[in-house]
Length: 161
Length: 262
Image (cartoon, rainbow over all chains, first blue to last red; front, side):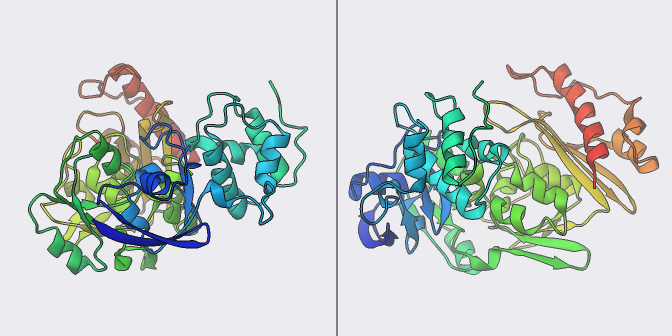
């Protein structure tokens, strides 16, 4: 076992992990932060996307040991300080960007990473950035709309074909 | 996954020492190795993570070459190389997805030499030099067939040096499920000739298309390869595309790369 220490959603945490313990397992099973979802466990679906030092990564494809000393952000840290939904989360609600909600934590974390680097993305840029996040319910249109709205852009132009 | 120990050395020397242990294996970004471990297709007793080796990270320009550290992520190459070698930056920007690009590394990709990976095409198509802790290996000598390279046990890719071409482009026809290359072609024009490297197509892994190189070295235009054809004999045939289909794509993607080269 190896002791790891990291900052998760602004709070310092530590734990003893095996070499093979994935960051997703550490977050869910040791820290009980179960908002990070395991969809495929093969780095295809993106439900486990979290931020490590500000960058979106798939937590099922990174060992917890490698996150030692980093700052990790998960969906549990996304809400505003008063507990209300942040602008991306609120936009997902307003634009019906989720149905079953399983992919949503990864979608929100990926959207946050996109908007940090590219505050006014085009529809094409949003769709390309979501390449590694799979949603089986919405058909993506409303997710794209939500991200457009969260970036303060007009969503009426997005085709709902 | 079977259990293993994991080490995080901070220097190349420490990483090489750690890899001396029996059944030790290097871990780059893990975007291929971790799924492989999950499927129990590999069972190292010890992993040596290279992500903490800062001397293997980053990009530097030097006398007509661009040198990329072996532990540099695709995202870093995509964001930092565009001004010097745009074709290489574009290639890196289209590997996998954004989260994969934030972890996957150039050294990991080249060490794995997946027959459908993008970076082998760039390295071979640019005549790059693979720099390890022991030696420098020309790309022409480095790639030795599907998942096979000139690397010896415990040898680490510390950097890759790409001669910057006059013009280059990479065209990838994606396999729609995996987004790996069904066929990818990297074309690079240098003052002394043109190189054409093909990935995704062959049972032998990445390879050069010498007939196209000769034609394009004479006249750098898509029409120059109009009379050529690609033999389907050694090409991959699977549910995503027959060997004949891949042979056709090699020519089409080469033509597109020549047209788009900048």
